[in-house]
Length: 281
Image 1 (cartoon, one colour):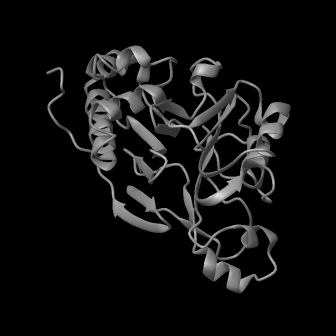
Image 2 (cartoon, rainbow, N blue to C red):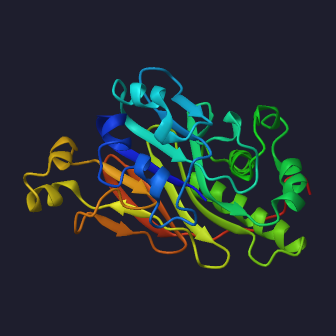
């Protein structure tokens, strides 16, 4: 599958997020400990918010560990909201337009997992996407099509409801095509102000997901830790797997959970799909 991280807090350099931690995302791209695949070398992407109205995105089909441009950018870009992803393809082509995060307007989206039977239900999903949105789909992944389905269902106004409806549609379509367990996902999405994350699978055996614990408390426990010293009290990370082995730094996200993080406040709630009449029905 894939590995990803999402950061929100005071601006930090991409280097501090992607390269400096003990088990950084770059390390995970070569040696993932908790992923289905140990190596995630089918491209990468990073999205960040700066002074422009829309977020910046840099994506490449190069392995993350081998891209000199990523290293160069990481040393010179700081941001208060960052999404980064290293990819292990589940069957779609290794091409730049299939690398995460995906962007539309101010929104970024990334996904770890897969839609079982995607080839069979791809048309069902595509027909359900708002015709005004459909032309903006650039790649061929289930992840991007799921993003546009969520946009169709109102991601920009109510992200949790929109994702629940998108997942409900996929599960309903998958079962109609004979798939017992259509959905496997961890998702992060943001408008640059609020970070949303989801852990869910139809089978109830979701891919790993963790959040960072309170930085202020951790700093008191580890006063000489250089990484903690650089993070603000409102800093929060959501990750596919921990970025280090610091005891007490990480909390596993329960199955079927959604997370909302804004201004350092982190709220967990149960997540379940919603099955509604298709918009095209």
